[in-house]
Image 1 (cartoon, helix red, strand yellow):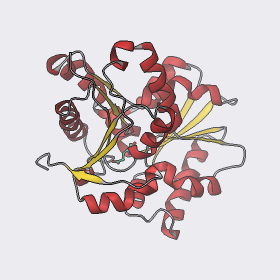
Image 2: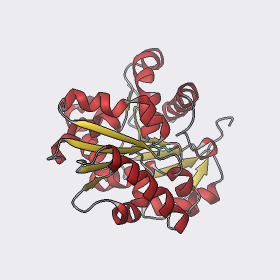
Image 3: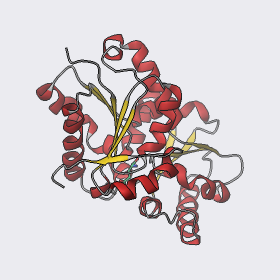
Image 4: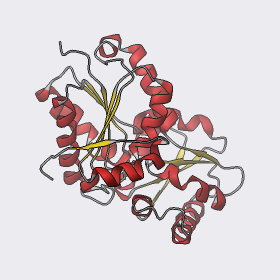
Length: 276
Ligand code: DGL
């Protein structure tokens, strides 16, 4: 058996740091390696094949670092690559390793927050096109109606630090208007992209009063905690020295400057060359 190693946390860029932040708060004892594929972000508008290819390359990199458990803290990668990696690649690479995503744990509980039976999902183009949320949610809450809205400009605004500017108001207002036009009974709005918590203030400003806004950090942290409790064999393979190591496929200076916004703490990253 591999010796205990950090839990891998992956995103196309910075968004997964909003999830890592909550995971670290809930499970501080473990070691974590974060990888942001910033050189190729955003993934949101890319094809299934491209997202799959990039995500698999990053997952293999985590395995080379010794990780036995990798969390795709990215909805787009979870929607477009996770199933194929779990079903086709893992058995060939190492059947004892695990890759988990963020869509299923969210789908498992989202219906509990709604009284009207209508929820709204704000996500990237890729996540919406995959229909992963309506399909996964139907398994747990067959009566729930899921309205989706792709917000293709939100990640670029956030990655370029424009999310607090007036330019961002225009796109937030526009996408919220669309989703509430489609589903006027929506009483739960899910931020189904790990970048979106950075736009929370603006979203709250433009959404109807009484609607509950859900982001995924805590949901994923709770689900990981429960997973480790149910899988002691995997838990034993996760090292516990409270270490956090950050990698980016792009400039470390840019990463360190942006990352604190998402992670809420200073970050010192290292560059990884994936041949990008
Ligand atoms: N943060 C990622 C997600 O949750 C995707 C952002 C992107 O690369 O477009 O979907």
